[in-house]
Image 1: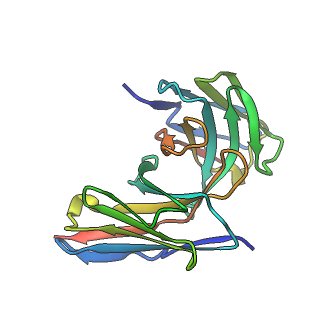
Image 2 (image 1 turned 120 degrees about the vertical axis):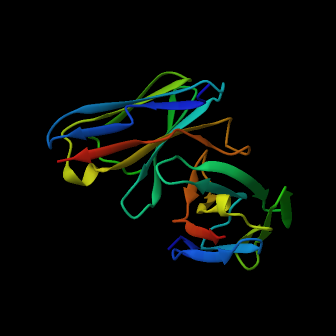
Length: 112
Length: 113
């Protein structure tokens, strides 16, 4: 069966360190993968998209990698800040027209 | 200016009632979606519309009926509400297939009692 797996447990990290979140998937061949941030009581906010033929994408303190052989994406936040505390969702374009499937998210807590 | 706005933000209703949630986007996007986020925070697609045409209907009970009067609006009507319908419903929009990401509304928390 098709699965998207993210660490559903919270990830606690000290301020200033690099946070690394993992998204693994099985039985998908996504054309692209997206990362979103969700704060409590709010809708997800789009952060980054990486295509299947791209290995790495950066935006300010964010970096995403995409390994289609390992079927894995890593999401890095460098120099993490308490304001980065949120749930981070990965989402795959799983084929079919305009359909994106979300993982359950990883809750990140940056401790001052 | 709110890009994707949903109303109401909270909805508490009794089992068996019929209710509607409205969604509007001012981004000029041609595709709109309804997602359901359950108590375990899993976000699952329900419907997708492109230029007012239904594209995706993901095994949703036919008590749920989306309506798109124009490409800026996508409403969700739910008949005969059940306890299991309690969740947060998110509207989203994108340009085409969403290669620039989806823009979500702030959600409607539906509680069926």
